[in-house]
Image (cartoon, rainbow, N blue to C red; front, side):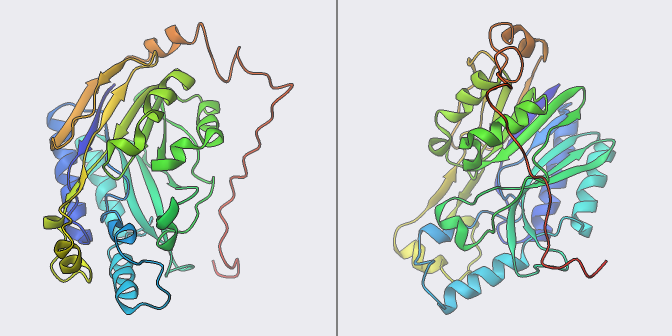
Length: 312
């Protein structure tokens, strides 16, 4: 399987333009004969970078409320027309896709956002949507906690693929849940700073004896619309580069195949061989011969709850 990380910039806070960029990137991936293309965390329509750079916890602050409303409006519902367009592009160009996006609640919870991972098979369509289990630190001012409904692996082009968003990759039980799903390729989505992923990408490869692909994006203040409430304030404070990339690929034995490449924009690709996974599991299989089910027991609650069950 030929895989690729799309280390590119979203059209921040512009859903239509970002979806168009996703489709153009899928087309580019097809030209490069890529089987599976992965985008950064919250790529549609951008990461909420302002939260940690402003007084985001200020209660009832009108600028923070305006920023959140703009961000909500730029988000994408899981069953939206935009998702259908992306699925059609994946099918037309025969490229499977792992896409980070800001998911807005449908019908129930219309005022709530989730950091989500959309999983698309080129022939089967949508495989599922995983909602990040726990937003990190200031992200909780923007994203709600997710669930295990989409915490599962899927077979794509003969490879069992799983994925997590940003710091939930540090959650041992979340990783183990995917290993239990027979994971052979682990994809971790990040906003775009390799430092926050330092250590865990290689650790996941060695722990699960899986291929470990990390995907980071790019973003600077030049990408932020001029009418965004905090843009001029942040520029005046000297902010410029927000995310500088750093996507990488680590083999099942822990060897770095593609080191982080900060600042490079484009598709970062490599052809992986699943045989390598099983060569490395002779010594260690975390859910097989090196597992003790008589001692350890993991139960996963995979329900997705809404506020009400009254409406169809």
